Image (cartoon, rainbow, N blue to C red):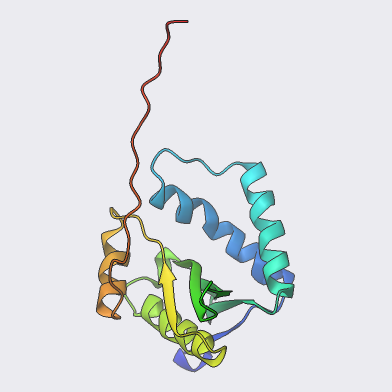
Length: 160
């Protein structure tokens, strides 16, 4: 099998969901240092993915090659208070075996086309600042910072 078997398609089976679930630990543990994906987390994601697959306001695209599913992008359409439609990239992941081949870019571009076809006027996403490869990809596609999420750790006070 060669490149002719490479495609991006809509999620269409429980096996697709199962494969996406295998990507979730790395996706979240990379973006949230100290996070550990446990069985409860995976069960919650399974429920969310199944619901997304049935929701006309959401779309999951998978990248597939001769070895199977190698990545995905999860999209949602939101209605802003102003009445404009805005797309959101809920999650995107490319398996290690597929990285460095432009798959993330292809998934993003296909996702943008889907959101455009649903009348979205803009697209937003969240990315962890330490995920420099993703930040560079999004910047190269024209995404820019529109807001900052800030965090402050709260010291534990062991005195009662």
